[in-house]
Amino acid sequence: MKIGVLALQGAFIEHINMLQSLGVEAVEVRLPADLEGLDGLIIPGGESTTIGKLATRFGLIEPLRHFAAEKPVWGTCAGMIFMAKEIGNGSAGRDQPLLGVMDVAVERNAFGRQVDSFEAELAVPVIQNGETRPFPAVFIRAPRLVAANGDAEVIARLPDGTAVAARQGHWLVTSFHPELTNDSRFHQYFLQLVENRKQGTGYRELAG
Ligand code: GLN
Image (tube, rainbow, N blue to C red; front, side, top):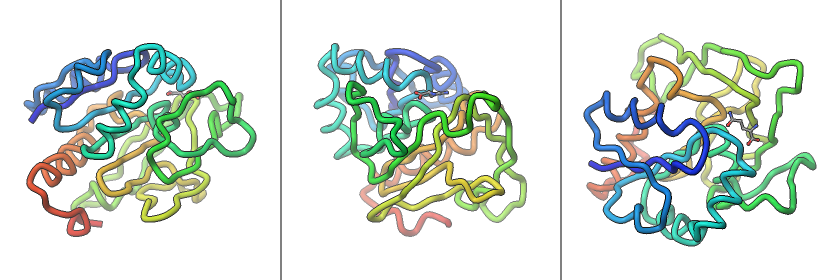
């Protein structure tokens, strides 16, 4: 299994380290040719406007859309914004290029200036395999999901109900940064989506 991490800007090294610690081959993606032979792709956190502009400059937008149509892609934080079809609540900049593959609407910087970053223990049934141990989620100037449409499904919420992770078929988005923790369960969950895609099995039978 070979996983790419979009390495234009942001927290890509941490994803690569986490993947390698799980024994998975992980490569940095900067150009369309780097997508060849990958089984899945992670789009890291960082600054979504910058990621979108650099992706446009390097001719990556269409190749990434083609890749995402076939293969699993996971966006964390800025990566989640980049994957969304819509930025809601008036925070959309017309000059912010989006991949726009996933049927979700997001709000950028949804937790306000006072709360730049915080940690929360999340109940995420799909990664807990029946255990109760919560996931330690790190939020940094994080977006939130304001809508999950079509067959996109919210898989994690803050205690106040705010939606912070979703899956739609082979696509995954999280508002937070699992690569900044020592907890690899979200990475393992993504690798399971990749494995299922490779084997041609569906997703419905995944727990949760
Ligand atoms: N606030 C950033 C954005 O809007 C996302 C922050 C992050 O990825 N940690 O793109």
